[in-house]
Length: 74
Image (cartoon, rainbow, N blue to C red; front, side, top):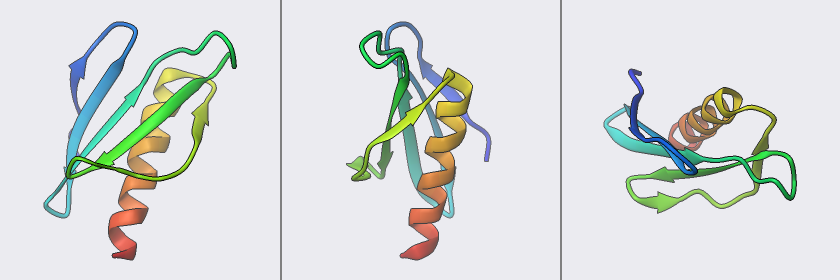
């Protein structure tokens, strides 16, 4: 996997490919929760669940890990 940063700013997003499937992970700081909510998409479809991280890098790592697990389960 070779992640590519596609957005910077309030919303940060990275994309990568895993087993021929496109994964996009987006996150940004949420002051209300003091966390980084993580949104995960596989081939444009959002992965259901609530994912939170303490740091932006942790959010991206979590997002790509969850996406890979979802793809492996299919």
